Image 1 (cartoon, helix red, strand yellow):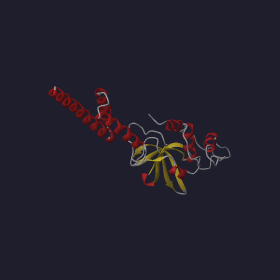
Image 2 (image 1 turned 60 degrees about the vertical axis):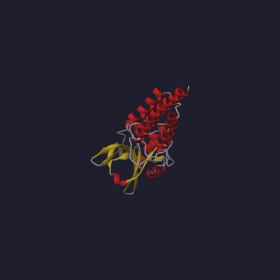
Image 3 (image 1 turned 90 degrees about the horizontal axis):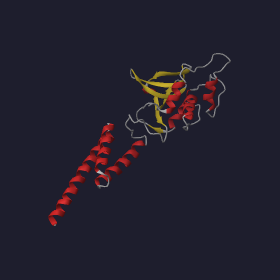
Image 4 (image 1 turned 120 degrees about the vertical axis):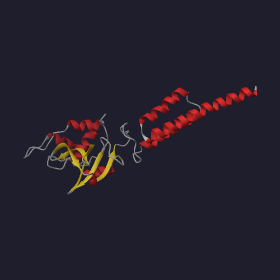
Length: 220
């Protein structure tokens, strides 16, 4: 499922500048979420658009009309994921928008002020400055957590705790098996590793209990 802010951004596709003295009131709404608060739609508005979408989704943003300020917002990612905020360099400054895919080696970006409108346009990954993700928001389930996102650390801690409980024989075996199998079915490297270790722990627990029971019977 698309992140909430990306759904909001999709709904804005087609908004565009109005030539002449008039200004698109929607673009002025985008500007209103920044500290600059520009009053015309001729002022570069890609950062204003990103900030407005994030704000509509209830997320914090830099409140800046400067695209490069997003390079220090949120948490960094090593690779783009659906809905990630990507910052690029371009002549005269920068650009920022939402990652929505790839085509012919180019990254497809849903953003504002792309040919003076909200649209999806290709950008060279060689011009990428930063890939960012909202702090505290889990990454999409279909994408493996990335090392710098801060998400993987929580998964490791939770997984390690569960494996330790399994090894100690605290968890009920059927429930523990289901947990381990669920990790493996995720298909991520972390899930496979944790699931495999958990299954080994389950087997060890069962064998240890049988050995202990046998020893008790022989001692009687």
